[in-house]
Image (cartoon, rainbow, N blue to C red; front, side):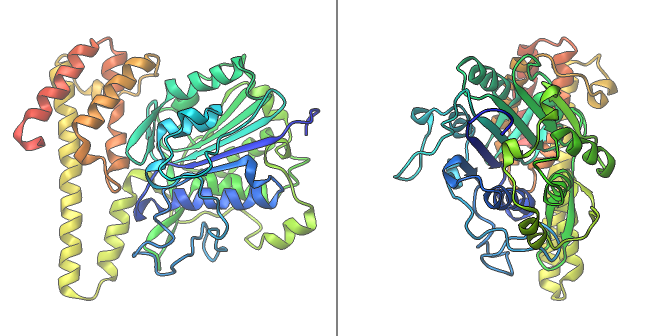
Amino acid sequence: MFGGEGKQWVLLVAGSKGWTNYRHQANVCHVYQMVHSNGIPDEQVVVMMYDDIAFSEQNPHPGKIINEPGGPNVYPGVLKDYTGEGVSVANFLAVLRGDEAGVNKQTEGHIKVLRSDEHDTVFVYLADHGSTGVFAFPSEFLHASDLVDTINDMARRQKFAKVVIYIESCCSGSMMLHLNKNVQAYGVAACLPHESHSACFYDEDRFTFLAGEFTSCWLFHSQTSDLARTTFQDQFVFLQQNITQSTPCQYGNKELSNLPISAFLGTSDLTTQTSRFTGPVTFQPTHITPSSEVPLIIQRHRIQRESDPAKKEALQKELDKLLQTRNLIKKAVQDIAKIACPEGGARILTDRRPLTRLADVKELAELFSHTFSGWCQDQLDGFVLSQIHVLVNLCESGVDVSRIKEAITTVSSLAEFQ
């Protein structure tokens, strides 16, 4: 530790479900394997993932999940503290703040939360789709305001000595942009508040992407470094030097970046570490693809590889429907902008305004997702979220929230969007 006798708590969350989003759960499984082998006791680790990947009918290797080409099976032994509908925003926030009463447990048994106190470190890792001020869970959104408020509340109640948060998603920087610099909390985001994130390592056998570029990079660095002698700042520099398709960012109390990673994630002796790591000696991601394009790439690969004419035609129809729906989503958002702010023009659609009105944007994003809930499904999540910035632009341009809400309701009532 860095001077105390506290415990190390770890909370790992994959916010997605579905085969096209394979990489998010694979990321979480891999991180779990690392912290477990680094000596963090299972009672101090909480894992939240939908758990529909390992035994999916689309998995050609039942019971196996890999996170890199030719990599080890990272599924065995993974904790299943919260799965299926248990992977919710309310449960995540309750687990984080140590609130057993706030957990809605789907099954009988022990309710597991972080029982951290003022002597302890907390490491939080989240992976899924995102947008400005939004991180997706399987059927709802975690908002930046709720994440930041929870961290601030935990600080007031002395629920940690230090906390570190890593987030992999598009626009992940926006989730921690307002992290209080006076709180002992440090965050690393995969990309800038307005930037997309990329998947990597397309697997021809599994027809899916195995990892996210950000997580693949920080895991590689963690597995090839002496964590007792390596700081979070060392790791951040490595991320800056090796991630090519997005811009890793630091938030909150950046002084914490000088702490050794082992203070949060444990460490293993170098002999064990060397025997466990069998990958390449340099970080070499392949098939780097923007997150929102992943479903299209996967479907096109399926079409190319299919030899049965009837099946090929069916797959093409699925792709056509996916493209049509994406166009419909884009048109709906454009119409909302036109109705709410007719004088705004193209800038409302293209600007990337800084997020300051967290509560208002939360209200608008919730209304949009509930109004167009039929679009919020596995293959469309990334694209739906990529359009949320338009609502942010409207809000940050000074358009009244009630006017934007009326525009959303008006557009949803049109026959073509029902």
